[in-house]
Length: 277
Image (cartoon, rainbow, N blue to C red; front, side):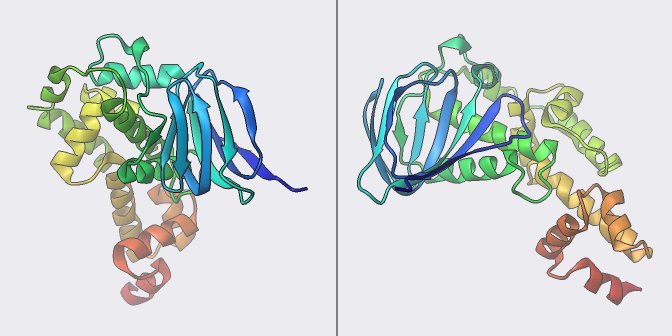
């Protein structure tokens, strides 16, 4: 009898594993060496964990700590579907340090099930980015979305008490944010990473993300896409072939440029080219 399937996706981010499952199979007691966070997408499941019994339904966020023994079975023969990201502890500890944790290695996710729609949406964006399923999922986009997910987890759902000075350090960061913004403005074609932008600005990744959005109205990866769209628009107006404009503006290919262009302007690059030439 077909009990469904479990798929392990290739990830573009070191230290991250991605799994998607749609199955009626029950899983025996086991553990992982990593932190796990996921979303139930269909059906429901029950399990026993080190943090007590679990009942998770569609839309719920599920979590697991490193070394935590747990099992899992569906509510009924229809099974359930879920997605998970497994994160090497060092990634989570780094985020905890940036958020002001006094002892990051003591980080523990508090609840095995979270009814948090904002966190579930954040997870879905991060999952799509790390498996390369979103447009323009370059290094900055992947890193920013994944870091945003870990920031929400550590900042709102762990036993760690974060120190206020980290949040206060955002004050007076405008000059540093302008440096990061200028890096993107000067050459939007050039690949950048969240860590690289933060280092150039002299800020932590947390400070850069919060400060950049406060100063520009957009997170760094969204701002980069906007600058690439603007560059592509100028190149197209100059008569550059669409494929060349996409490559010279930093898009992975012409189809990525087209989707970004339509979202921004409501017309395709080809339509725009016909109107301005």
